[in-house]
Image (tube, rainbow, N blue to C red):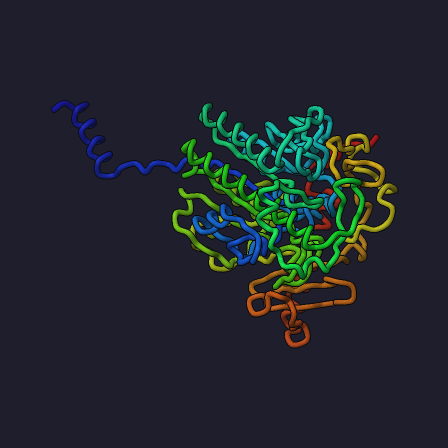
Length: 505
């Protein structure tokens, strides 16, 4: 036997005895988010009326995150998804505040890792027009069909920053159809994709298809005795209507959104993409006053109590989560960036992050969250217009129309400003920290002061343990204060090296 033949024989033997392990291909990733969709408003969480058969299927087939959290309002949550950072670090204090151009997003990172990136639906962290330095394209998305804010039936959307264009039909189905068309093209080109789909539903003002409205005509008559305030679809201003009529429309929107999710899941199966596509659904904050009926939780949208921040969370990924599971480990929208970066095999940005990699949770190895969760409604005070703007006012003007009137306009403009200095007043505002089973809330409502709850025993946050557990209060108060100091350091632009804020005009 020749030397060459002996070497070839030996190599063949090694391959047979020690086969090379096939490398798992990177998953396609789709993030879905409902607008004002609260934790309780799903069938799988036991809602007595709302029908969500496709989210229920996702929950029964994948990983159900029973203690999944968002920020108290929508723009801050969207910023946290994009950056893995608390929104106060870069000035998204409330809806209507924009992100800062220097922020590094998950779309930036995945794009560099070879992913095709696209955004569909609600943006709400800056204008979507082409000239905006915070539009989806500037934030890392190759393509987008988006709205500055929320949208209803027959939405008007901007494609890649172009002039707003009207689409006719049910809004959730419209953006899902557009996303499916995009995914089909990526499949044809053999491209791995990262797709973000942020619905306009079920944000008020509510509407619905006749067939969806018909599903809820038997809601209890008792809800007709309560009037709630919301936006009029006719005038765009506030109006009072019976809660029963409002809930019928709200629940119809949720069901329509759920149906569109089912359409997406079926398309992934037809395209042969379902097995290695990670599909992650969540809400962006808790239930608003116009949609609130009886609840097992305290608070509502805008509050740091459970009904303001706990939202539906489900991950379906057959290749990565082959066995259905339910997890009570606390997780949050800030976790999305570090988790997705780990799955894609890329480094996270070298800036303070507030999320963690949930990879061990997906694998069933994380039994408790190793670090706390923090929430904070920043005390925005004084005349915002008197502060130095971060981005020129003209670049912050929205273009996509919506039903709800803001001042004298039917669209949304944005603001972000340079923070002048850090004072003791900047540490105020309603805030909370969740560590293990304990949750500390400070100034959750006016006059509530310091509250401590055991969420495992008391998810309704009805029994204040602050006086009986002063040691826990001291420990969590210090952790919360130290975290606030880190956030304020970021707010002063110290994470940007060198600092290059967009000049104002």
